[in-house]
Amino acid sequence: DTAVSQTPKYLVTQMGNDKSIKCEQNLGHDTMYWYKQDSKKFLKIMFSYNNKELIINETVPNRFSPKSPDKAHLNLHINSLELGDSAVYFCASSQVGGGSSYEQYFGPGTRLTVT
Amino acid sequence: RKEVEQDPGPFNVPEGATVAFNCTYSNSASQSFFWYRQDCRKEPKLLMSVYSSGNEDGRFTAQLNRASQYISLLIRDSKLSDSATYLCVVQGYSSASKIIFGSGTRLSIRP
Picture 1 (cartoon, rainbow over the protein chains, first blue to last red):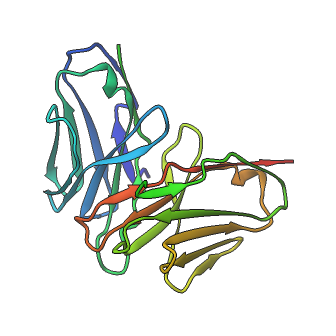
Picture 2 (tube, chains in turn yellow, orange):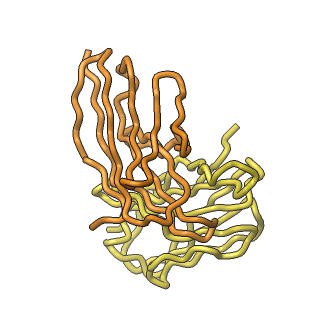
């Protein structure tokens, strides 16, 4: 039983294309996140949604648009892909409050390569 | 000064050794602290939360020093399977607060 799943696992596409990555969690958590891990392995938060509401929006180009249709899903759509978007994108979820202290559970990652 | 700083390593230690990492943070208002481990080409996985009083989980001990603004992780009797990158994570007061991952410390355990 996968707690946090992402599709696709690998994505190879050309510059200028538009692509989406999907994320689903079956943990019943109320908060979901998108992270980007670049070639230097630095993990940086991009967005966070709590109960379908955007609560963290770091300095990310507006070509990146998250969408949360419900608490269990957080998708990431990227327009006009650029070479610099190549990275591993991780989705995560956590249960905020209730003593869980924002512990996050990560999906397996989507390795995006823009050519 | 970086918001969260870790020694990148690599730490290369023999099996059975004790190894300790520190992680410093710049925002004194930070409230939540964690250690994650990340294996090569895998996702980060929560190792342990760090509580004010310090906490232990088997061979792993985490400490928080608010006065000096650092957290530490001690691994005793290290195993080959402990080889990974260890990430410290710092978060502010609420769910809308910034979540900052350190750049990680690479640990390699040799037989």
